[in-house]
Image (cartoon, rainbow, N blue to C red; front, side, top):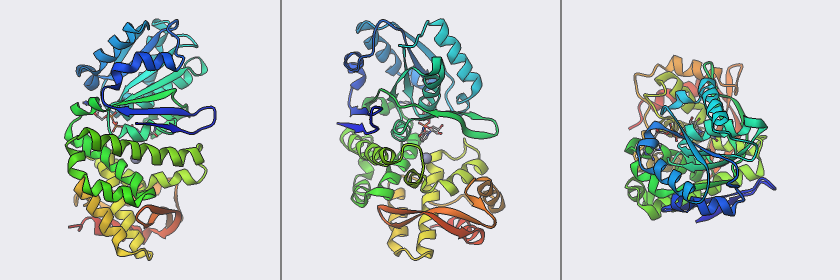
Length: 364
Ligand code: NAD
Ligand code: ZN
């Protein structure tokens, strides 16, 4: 399957299919990536121990490219200025020039990090994404690249669109189950904000998705990328519409911060956050089924829908107050008004949000 992210002259294709890494050399040549300038692959140590890195290196070498690889530690901590600097050092040592390409082979961490190196090295060089997680269907569309600062996530970044995305479904087979489910959270989110039919499809195909059935996964990633692409095409720089992508993220981010990023994966936190947003929606007048369907489909793909009781409500509320959307006793929420449709900028009182947090701890 192929789709195009429509962004004028920065448009780019996303190829989704089994074994696409084996065609990487040919694709690179088709996209005018010159073999005269060296290529650097950035990946993390979990991906590097699988065969994915060796496969990609060898196919690119066979196609005549000069290839070097940089392996960073796995996990969010690699999205740092220190690792960024190391990668720039490696790029310089490997002789990367203005016509070089950086290839991100990995999940969202590697994509954001390598993308930011590509955005800044010599004021911007070409960049190709080879996502190896389900969550990365989200991060590979939209061109947001960044590293973290100790005080704030994703605060040092840029917009830098890739030349193409090569989504090889076979790489997903080595992904740990918990990461599979966490990635499906954003897939379901893309349905909840845009496409009720796709939400019903996720429900019906939840078992196939969790079992990494290639057809089901290919379709789900295609749909997820398509929704994100449609939103981003209409609003590349996050003026308004793009905010709908943050469904479940106000509560979700607070939960991640309070629980610790290793306790609760991003996808797990926003799953609970989406159930919270749905509860809120019903209180604001949406039909009950917004809540029941949201909760049902997330449970079906194996995600948590109940807030762990040990997470302190005061701390969660404090974390939300640090969110820039909070002002004087009230905050703005993205609220699902129906399955497949959300509204942004709902102002709700902090006391109502607190009520929701408490209710989320009682979720059956
Ligand atoms: P990740 O990149 O850390 O991957 C999750 C884990 O799976 C890691 O331990 C990784 O080493 C391992 N892994 C990856 N691929 C594997 C494979 N094929 N086999 C075995 N193990 C594998 O995390 P993620 O969930 O992919 O992405 C999260 C990051 O994405 C966050 O930093 C978040 O900020 C970012 N993000 C960015 C955007 C954006 O628009 N740029 C959107 C959403 C998320
Ligand atoms: Zn997210």
